[in-house]
Length: 141
Image (tube, rainbow, N blue to C red):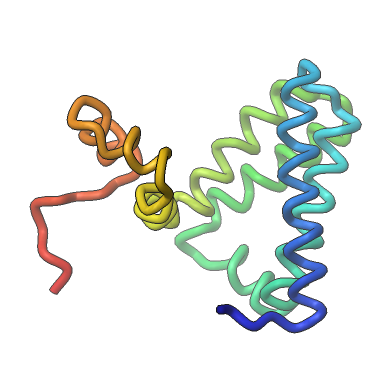
């Protein structure tokens, strides 16, 4: 079991709330209020989980600069009531920032009973692997 400090537990709650409000904002046809609340909670949650210095370090890496810029501009556009354009730009930024984690997420989801069966289906698995960037031909050596 993973031990989290109290600050990190609050961070997980804020991040989960941010993801919830972000998806709820999408389901309510890009309501800028829900999207903005989701973004703010998500950023606060990430900061509480990994700490302020690591958050700044993560977003300011040279390899993540384009993703960070798109993410921040997308948030600003959402705050200025340009929800759809901000969402598209922010989604591009999220892919740039967190795209490296998609392979890990897919492998984790494959270990869950019913979801793993669907993701490991021979017709679906190659497409999911290509999207997540999982290369089964190389050895992890």
